Image (tube, rainbow, N blue to C red; front, top):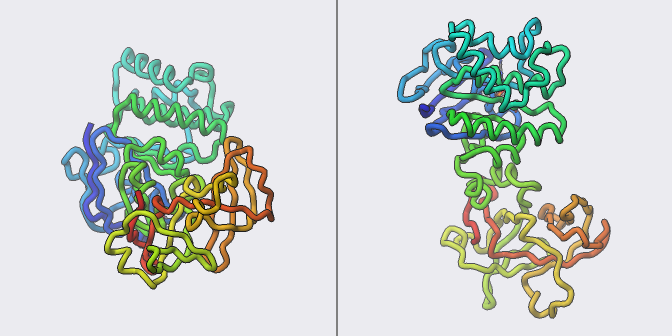
Length: 373
Ligand code: ATP
């Protein structure tokens, strides 16, 4: 399968809106690449430009090394599925799957074989002979995916394909889709609002902002080493807590000052962070690195590593609980607690912060200064 390459691609709508501002990206052969980012950042436009449904104002697009920047959509060998993709209403599910192959003159025996295989993978058998009006939204969505993939495109583009489904159906279909895409081995770009889906399905993830790719990397790399506060605040459930802090140094070491609270910074910060001593920084903490203190441990062992805060809200989630604590003038710190924790909203709670795992960002640009272990 070919790779997809975008070289400084810009897209501008008629009214002057710059939807893509010089995007550079190489999606590798057979890779599943997911794109996340705030509403309006250009995700859909990115797919539409690759499919040829919008023209690139500048830059080049290549598929398998072939420059397709000005090639007609039908000649690109790209299949796109978008949210609420309309099926042909007068055709059955099977008819919808067969149509594109028949138009291309595929031999009937091969059509039967491909439609059969697709129906097995996507579980379409029970409604293969029904028309779209009599199917559920999830069933219609599965047929839309089948209709695109049965053509065996070189590149598969999916735009929020599961967005309007209920959470249970979405999770199930999300697994099926992941299996289907992996099985096809087709180079795939999937746009989603759902960061969990992006992390679970993508070999690599791209986070977009204002028409540009802010960071591209493997899910764990983006999670552990976000390049900016935007990436930090987009990935993770809940995302990283971002707090305004000041760095101080004294004879006892380096301190993170959060309002009236102080935490001792473990680990050896790099030069770019040491240069910020005495200045404001943004400190990022993942919820799993903030946990209620074990009250049986001696207070001396907790000195410098824990702070006492009021839990403003407690969110029960089954396996664990989230304690949301506001630190005046700095932001909200979210802690992850075991589900047996009995803290209630309004209670004081001592939280241990694993400062060896914190991230630090520049408050003006949002760029990462240093990531802990
Ligand atoms: P969402 O997550 O809300 O679907 P998105 O990230 O997919 O958003 P796009 O739909 O690509 O974003 O839109 C990018 C920018 O282009 C936005 O500012 C949007 O308002 C604008 N835009 C999209 N379509 C058009 C259009 N047809 N004409 C003018 N501007 C448009």
